[in-house]
Length: 98
Image (tube, rainbow, N blue to C red):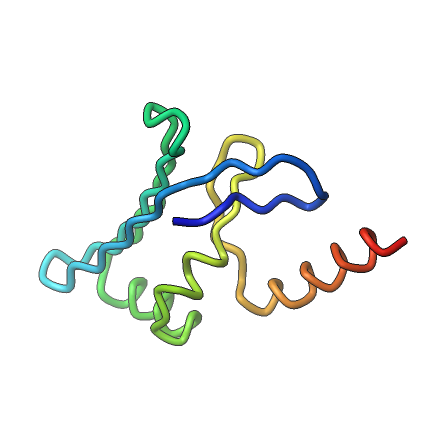
């Protein structure tokens, strides 16, 4: 479970995140369900062994890092590049401190 973090301070929605990596069917699936309204859910699906391997390698095979990299932007769930997380976090902290 995680909060949707946005580019500025404010109210956050809470989502339950389920990640499935089925090597047999070669599908990687991320589903995030809004805990306040379960009809509100988002999904990312990656097909193919090579593509799934690229995603897992990019996130050091860490499901926790994948969950932390999820964002809801303009009603679309996106998976941020893990290198961007440090930059985004620093930018937000600087704006809040100002």
